[in-house]
Image 1 (cartoon, rainbow, N blue to C red):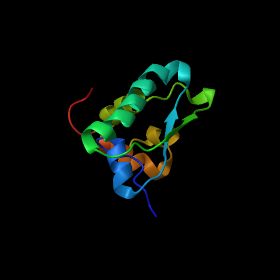
Image 2 (cartoon, helix red, strand yellow; image 1 turned 90 degrees about the vertical axis):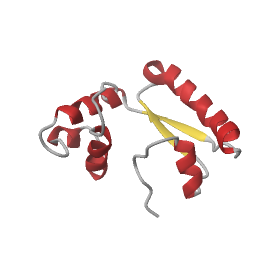
Image 3 (tube, one colour; image 1 turned 45 degrees about the horizontal axis):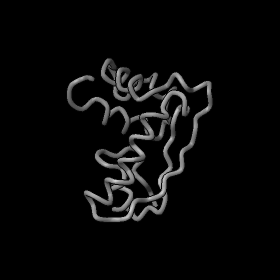
Image 4 (spheres, one colour; image 1 turned 90 degrees about the horizontal axis):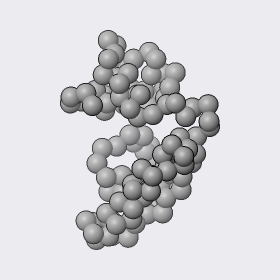
Amino acid sequence: REIEPVVEGYIWRYAHRVGASILFRGIRSWIKDGSEERVLHTQNIWGPILLGRIWPIPTVYLEGKPEYNHISSTLIRNICHGAQEDPPTVLNELVPKVVAERVAQLYTRGAPP
């Protein structure tokens, strides 16, 4: 079954809609992303309970290789906003090619950050 690699809105709503039993989240490192991920984790626990009246889905965190720690969503967003092509060629060097076009579409919507 094909799963959408990039989604908008609350990830827990999407996960429940497609019947997921576990969430996997990639982070650069706990040092770089730890405090933000803890906030998101709290939202992914309480959001389903308070907003969806459903039980939260367990989350497993996958820490990235140190050589990729410089790659962030802000970097990807800035590349997409400044690109003359769709998707930007440099994006293929930073994200898997299979999702590059979808990532570029999502990050070029609306005003730049």
